[in-house]
Image 1 (cartoon, rainbow, N blue to C red):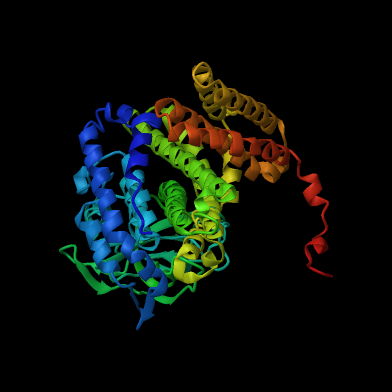
Image 2: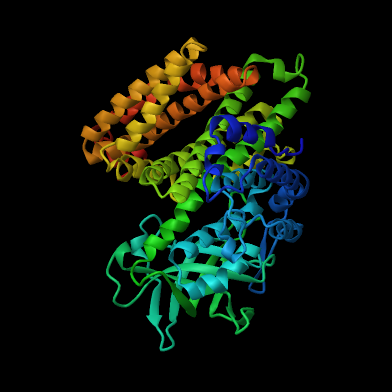
Length: 563
C-alpha cells in the first residue's frame, strides 16, 4: 500500500486535542486562520502522498553515492527537493524578513511529519536546514543573517550540523577540531567531523556547515567551544557560490537504513569560516539548533510509525489465513496498540510545538519552561514508538516482513537511527531527570496537575477511563517527589523508565481528551491506550527506583567480557 498522509488525524489533534486556536489568537500568529491551516495541511498532504512517497523506495535501493568527491543523490530526490523548495515549505515558520512565512512551529512540525512519513531520507535535508535557520536567527550577526537566511529558506542552500568526531560523540567537549583567527576577521577551521547528514548535495547549489571548533585560547570542555559557518563554496560579492572552500567529503557512511540520506565524513583543511554568536559560546548556538532538531526527530519517529502501520494494516486486510488476518485477535491487538501509540506520540510532539509557539508569541517564561520539559519526552517517546511500531509492522507481515521486497523492513531499518541521533534517548532521559528538574519539579507537577484536572472533568462522561488516568497521574506525582529526593546516581539509573512513564501519562491524557471530543474510533483507541498501555507504568516506575547499587553490583565479566 502506498503512503497516505494522515491529514485528518493531524487536523483533529490541532482542532480538538492540542488546539492551534490559542496560538492563532496571538498577534504574532494571527495569520494562522482555520482556512489557512486547512489549506496548508491539505496541500502538504498531497505533496507528501503524490510526490515524495514514491521516492522512498528509490532512496533505499539506490543509495546516495560519492563520485569524484561529490555526492550524487538517489533517483528523483532532486525533483522531490525542488517541490519542497519551490513550495516554500522549508521556510514555513521562518522569519518573513528573510523570506519565511512566519507561521507557527506547530504547523511546521505537523507538515514535517507528513514529509518524513513519505520519505525520511529526503526530509532530513530540510530538517537540518530548518535547525540551522533557527540558530542563525537567534545568534548570528546581521551580516550573516542577511547573506545566509534567504538562501537557506528558499532551499537554494542547505544547512548541516557538525558536532561529532571519532573521539567526541556525546562528550562534545572532547573535540579536537581547531579554529585560528585570520587577519580579515574570519577564521580558519581544521579537523574532521563524522556523521554529517547531507554533508554534501547535488539538490542544492551550496552546503553550509555549522561547525564546532576550539580557538587557541578556548578553555577545556564545552565552555571553550565556538561555532562557525563554513560554506562549501565561498559566497562572492553578489552572494552567489564562488570559489570552493578548503573542505571535502572523505567518505559516506554505510548505514543500516536511511540510505538515500548521505551521511558524510567531512575534512576541513584550513577552511574559511565566520563566527556564529560569540567566541567560546558556540554550544549555546548549537543547542538552539539541536533542540529544534530533537523535536523534529521525535516527530520523525511518529512519521515512520504511521507509514509502517498503514502498510501493516493494508497487508493484514488482504492476507488470507483462515480469513483475513486483520480479524485475528492477536493481529488486531498489534494494530490497535500501534495506532493508539502513534496518536499519543503525535499529540505529545504537537503539544511541545504549541508551547514553543506560545513562548515566542507571549514571551512568558512558563511556556518556555513547558517546551523545554516536553522536548526530551517528545524526542524519546516519539522515536521509541517509531521503533516499536515499525517492528510490529514486520511482525504483522509474518515471514513476508523479513523479505525486503515488501518494504516493511525498510521502515524498521530507517527509523532505528532516530533514538540515537540528536542526543540518544538515554541522554534525553538524563536531561529530564536532572536539568529539567532543577526547578524543584515545578513544571513536572504543573503538567501532572493538568492531567488530574482533565481526568476529573471526564469523570462523569467516561468514568472507566478517567479513573485509571487519575490513578496513574497520582502515582507519577508520588514518583516525581521520590525522584527529587533521590541521589544523582539513582536518578541516572532510573531515568529512562521514568521518562517512559511520564510520556504514557501524557499520552493517556491526550487520549482522554480525544475520547470526549470524538466518539467511536477516538473513544475505542483511548480504551486501548488506557487499558493495555498505561498499566505498563507500574513496571517502569518500579524499575525507575530500583537504584544504582544493583547495577553497580554486576561484575563486568557477567556481560561476557572475560578476564
